[in-house]
Image (tube, rainbow, N blue to C red; front, side, top):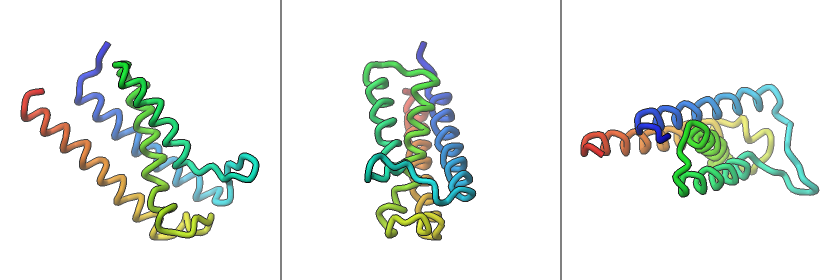
Length: 128
């Protein structure tokens, strides 16, 4: 069963926002927790990328339901949370709490939401 575009848009945005808030709260209280496999530090940007690839494959095969859209929102939340942190700081645990990391996350997340809403309203206006 296909979801309507309004429901998909809201599920995506809500899951994106909830993910960013939960990750930020969790890492505020536990700033030194890292997922390390061997000598590799696995940032949640990478986890988000893998989840987004999975969501895209499901969507590509027309498997569009609550779970797929929420998975895409969670994945995007992981990515938007760490994108500026990894590009604009030294990647340390301390830098994650910096204003560059925080405001970078707010701006990137905001841009994603604005684009998502803009596409929704454009399609709605065109009747698609």
